[in-house]
Length: 70
Image 1: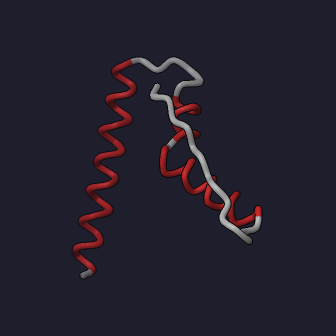
Image 2: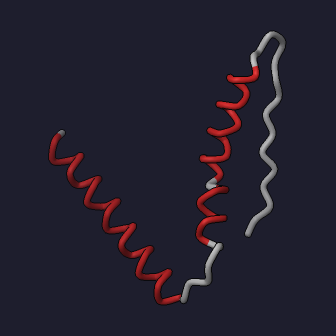
């Protein structure tokens, strides 16, 4: 697991809600929560490969559907 420090600096006259929104966006972009959820339980290599294959297929199907509509 890589070490990631997410930091949000407030500008002058910037409210807390906006900074919180930026923080949440950065956390999602870095996939921090997804990594934590994935590592909660041990998963065999074969299961990881199966999940990755399924994820790739779903992504490719989605891209193909987008290309067909355009």
